[in-house]
Image (cartoon, rainbow over all chains, first blue to last red; front, side, top):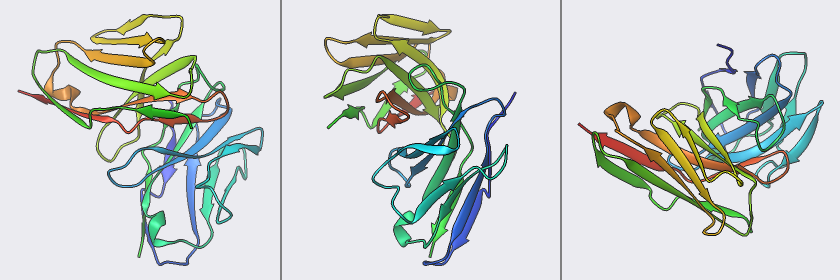
Length: 115
Length: 111
């Protein structure tokens, strides 16, 4: 069964360092998302991406965050200068269709620990 | 602002009983609601979607209802099993390219 894959599964970094989290969405999906979940808290929307551009972003997704689809398969989230509060599980998701009926397929997540 | 709330943080239930989880929303009338299951340290997994014109939706032991008057969706697991223990999330699309998730209800089914 097709699945969303994410790498790395766990990354430890020093505050102020840049981090790139990678995702390979399901191949025929058109809509891509990044969510984060701080330990013990809710799944929070960061950004959605369609047709090679950001469709929507939350207030969390400030200038230190960026997303890219560098080729036909990868979808990346970059955090330019990490802060302690960026420590969280980051989930990539994709869907075949837009909104409403488009169920989200999530990856297993990348756990980011900022020291 | 739009809010979606799951008012039980945790729910313990005896094996074989029906678990009922609640999702309430305010300041918005979503056309669809989705329910997901999340196991510890893993990504959410889609379970069911219900449309506003559907009162009820079923899938095996799962049942979801949608009451637009009460602004509420109920999620039922009948004949619950220890393997059903997980966190269950409701979510809605705000009409654009994002899905908003509730805080989740952690269900524990006791053998």
